Structures are given as C-alpha cells and as structure tokens.
Length: 100
Image (cartoon, rainbow, N blue to C red; front, top):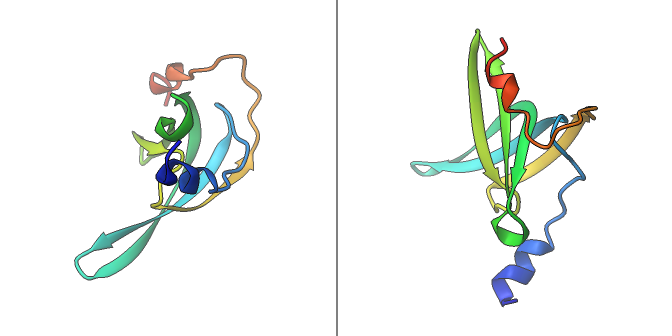
C-alpha cells in the first residue's frame, strides 16, 4: 500500500452495519466558506473494501426518500456516530425504498 492508503486507513470510523441509524457530519467548500452538513438516516448497504469501500444512507424527508452514498474513508466526513443499532437479517435493505 502507498502513503495515501496508509494515511486514509488511520481514520477511525465506528463499527456499523446495514440497519443502523447513523448521523454523519460532512464538510464541503462553498465559494470561500467551508460549510458543514448533517445527514441522518439508516444504512441500507455497504459495498467494496479497503480504500474504495462505500456505504449508502437513506432518510425520508417530507414523504420523499433521499439516499446518499458516502466513501467510508473520505476526508470530507468529519464525524460519524451510530445513534441506534439495527437488527436485520439482510446485507442490503433495498426493500426500504418501496416503503414510506
């Protein structure tokens, strides 16, 4: 592994799995300002491994479902916390897309 791979893997992420309710604080640059955005929802799947691993979080706002795919070791993720552990028997919770 290269220097970049090692520096990204030093980032500590909490132990989470599909079904967990998480809150993610991301930072992004808008013009000259650095803003922070909070996204809270249920993890519906994880994909990949190592530095290329991603996870999908889904939330429902005003009756409309919103999904966001986050790279696990992204430098834009400032903080992630698991609010509630889920108890599911599946690795992908795509059936939640059909429910309201």
